Image 1 (cartoon, protein in one colour):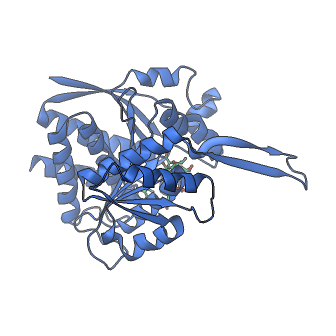
Image 2: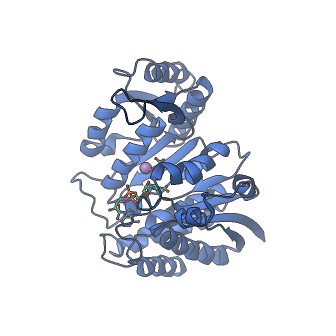
Image 3: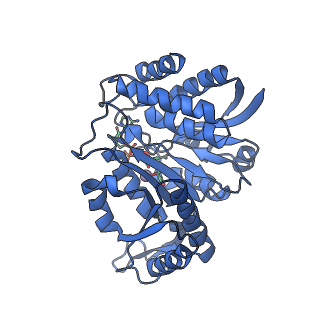
Length: 348
Ligand code: NAD
Ligand code: IPM
Ligand code: MN
């Protein structure tokens, strides 16, 4: 029997509820499809920070390296730990250390879910650069607190980093409907984004079966609301991809539906799977977090592990569940109710 080693990091707030829900579904499908998921659970979170003074132990990254995949809930509890501390202490270092440069975020309407848009179905795959760009962590502050204070946050775009994410986007487009939309802001950002545009044009010659559009981030925000049905694969920098994927979540009915995979494409290190949403302090502890985003992210993890049949089964069950009107509106069903409905649909 195939065995997979999964590192579980529930994190903070609803991260704990949704990872528990998703693992229940994943263990159920593992039983049905005859493979084993072994899990190691790591309590790294803001509570852990209060206990130990760090978000992860010193050897935390090395510990994770031994797993086949990482499944994460959400990190952040801004009331007690500044976000810049918790996210730079846990989530962002994992993406970087394991070279998970391709962040894949699918946006489509599940059956029964009424998104806020009147237009029909859409099926968008957002590919977000995940290790550099605006998240490079370069910069600093001088004269802190004084009238002449200056804060600098530098974006870093390397040829290697831009090329590999663009190639990833082109390949995804080839495997889908053959259209790639590259999102930049090259009218205002004359170095990084003009470089990105040039790289896109140069690479396009190698992918003649893919049609490419260049759209600025501001126009893209409007396009995703006005004409999402015309979009196939989107490729964007770290920050632009971050923002567009919350917008993608909104048009697919809310953050409770948006799944995400942080992929290390050459498989030299584990990839990480997590919903797009955060720890949602406003609904934490209430049992009403929608687990579908986390369950769908779990299906993406199964596919990455080569368990395609199980992944199909989970995705089909999610669609059946929402098709029955379960979990389609915020608060209409509890986390457990939705989870149990997905498991029942898999059995059915
Ligand atoms: P958020 O995604 O946690 O919440 C935004 C809104 O969406 C809230 O109203 C919330 O109730 C709702 N929501 C989110 N997920 C939901 C779900 N599954 N079901 C129902 N409703 C849901 O964003 P935020 O409030 O900006 O961030 C809260 C904390 O999470 C911050 O510390 C932030 O930095 C962190 N965060 C972490 C991650 C991550 O770990 N990947 C992602 C985003 C935000
Ligand atoms: C996401 C989150 C993170 C990001 C934050 C919490 C650092 O918003 O995964 O989308 O910006 O990447
Ligand atoms: Mn985000």
